[in-house]
Image (tube, rainbow over all chains, first blue to last red; front, side):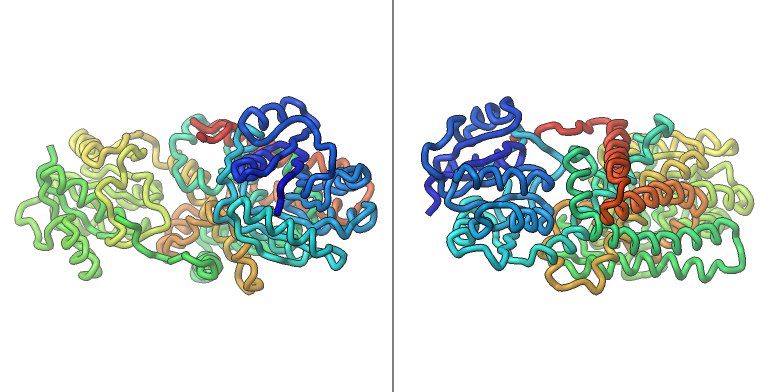
Length: 292
Length: 292
């Protein structure tokens, strides 16, 4: 049972965890490098601003990926908690840092709640942010039972569904499902820069949906992409190959050359492969009618 | 006043127009190459299946871009209507075809309602599909007042907001706001093919939003992209340059080379440019808290 908890970093995720845990009767101690953020989270009801005299049951490190290792090692040196977890969307690098540098790596289990989105900061926090969402835990071979158990209790407190995964496998998969999409959304949204003022008139739901996540804070996302650079680059390199093929086909079609049939085949193939990819997802029905 | 209307092509858009017009008391005659589609649209209340003996007030050609010219010329040869419009998302090529081949180009005004999405077919039709949406009309120098007036009346019947635009300007802008996003969604979704079955577990709202439009029917979308090949290629070529720059930065960061600072700067720059692009849109507030 988690009775006391520390949340280090009261951005969107940390504040939301504090709100969810507080509502379940957990005593939550909040801390943030930016005192205004911690105060805002406390004002929302996410926890209190003083510190616990004794080690709390669980410390949740809710800081950007590159800070997780150092902040966690610092917390462990102070013996601030019995178990430790984090919420960064990159798991392998931070975990390696903990195994190499933290005093008690056995007390740590990596975590990544799949929630958030284009909003950030404590004021965007919501107690139900994680409800029904997936929350990955990445126990290392050194993670002890108590840390894993407390990680699972945190997931349950927040109403999320736990999924256990190797940290490297997590990073490869999340590169595909979250980090590469963020990059593509940014690249697409950047095309609006310097375009005639009439362009926004033609922006519909499709453009907004494909670019919405690009609103995420750039310092945090640069940190995430850098921390997961190799897997993200692998996904984008694959995508770039397809893009080059498609561009060649479009140029051929624009020129009205003899390869028009081949060009149409390439277009259809790219589109069909997209549909096939989405067919792998649950609840995706190509060409399904909407509810009326 | 539009009292009678023909809808040629009863997919999502044609059926939705029929539903909206019928609800406003217009007599709508439906036709589709696929009789089952026309019958389904009629069963939903989008109109009737027989033909009008006299020319209707407005014929709406709701077929893929490459069919607009030929179908419109055929309808004009039969004198089926007083005025004609279409709904294809590419305007310049079809309009050129009409000007060159149709018997009465003055009776035609190009149109493009910005609605639709990942669903298709008559069963996805909704009378309120266009409500509050933008509907572009692209009168040519030859378009007569009656055709433009009836085009505007159609937009009003459907509860949409009319925007007049040159056909070439429309195509360049829609390449950016609709066609290129569709391609990027397809390329991203295709990355799911052949990936471990655990990948879908990590697919959250972000991935779904950025790829949803890729579910559109591939024959229709191949036709759209081919009909607007040059403007779409121009947008994608720009995007590819940024992608290459970003990939180089990620590879540098993955290698841990001396250009790490420059790599982080490139990442942040790409992300900031995405945010700047979205800032051009109405109602987009970077980092704004959600409604609680």
